[in-house]
Length: 327
Image (tube, rainbow, N blue to C red; front, side, top):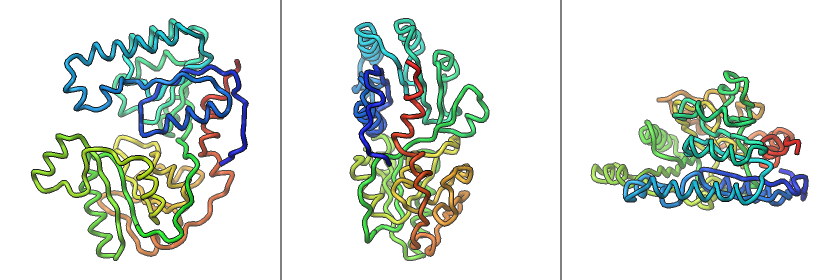
């Protein structure tokens, strides 16, 4: 990734509304500021409602959400913005989005989707409010001419371990049949003499139900801190990827695996259409197959063209998503 200081966004005023997914939006904001942009950042939901349990326990989540929306609208009244960059948008109520658009009639509204449209209930009525829409899902972009295809990004990665002690690692949210798939992978790894690390996270109620049935091994009621996730992946030879069945866009896990120069085993069939795909580095499988192969996991990855790697960098993402603004 190009780390050369750039000030090409100097004076650009941007309102960023994200979803609070790990600290990816923090990285976007930090790099935008490094490149000269003036930023105001909000999450789409107040911190008190960021988890399902908190929302359930709160006496009046609607009032809390209304106050949060008012804070964003007040920020829009206080100053003009050249651009409003929103991630996903389904966590924002339609009347709020309409009010924000009315307050900032001269701002360029940009929507970036890092979920497939099939998983976003209510997104269709929000799309007309945006001037530009970009999606990480290649198939959504092919089906919707108004959407530009823009994959996710990886950030600067720490130095990989020279002696990885984990053969296959998988960290992710517990949904659909991920637990069963992870268990099959672990069992197959044991027969091949491969070591694994699995960390699935879920809500407290689901975790408790699994714990009472003695099935909570490797399942946790909280996410793994991002620095810890990164450290695990850097210690691993191969990253396992089990995207949601309704998602065809590549996960952040996949793109970060590219940035870490690691092997990947994935059920994302569309990965073969990407410019970084190489059968030496990426194995595509269909469940219930695990795709594990000792030679594949243990062999060194094939180097990827630096120009291809740069296209998945954070700077390249900003160039495509934010930088085109004409001013």
